[in-house]
Length: 106
Image (cartoon, rainbow, N blue to C red; front, side, top):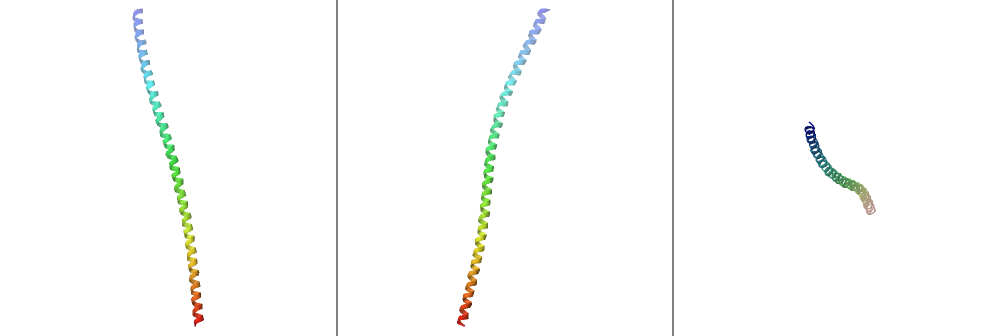
């Protein structure tokens, strides 16, 4: 009976060792896959942050362009008003001069 028990126990021990080796191999593979996925996620986050910075810079540049455009339009409107006022003054002075000339001749 001791020999049979010994054989059974040895077989069980061998199966447990094989199972342990298989589990260890699976764990090693899972750790490797996890490391690769972690590297990939870190790379994606790094690229996302770079892209986010570029987008923020682009938004800031677009806002600056828009602000500059608004300043130019305001300045253009101011210059137009000044030209209209100057033209009106010149026209008024020309009319006055013409009226004075006509009055002095007439």
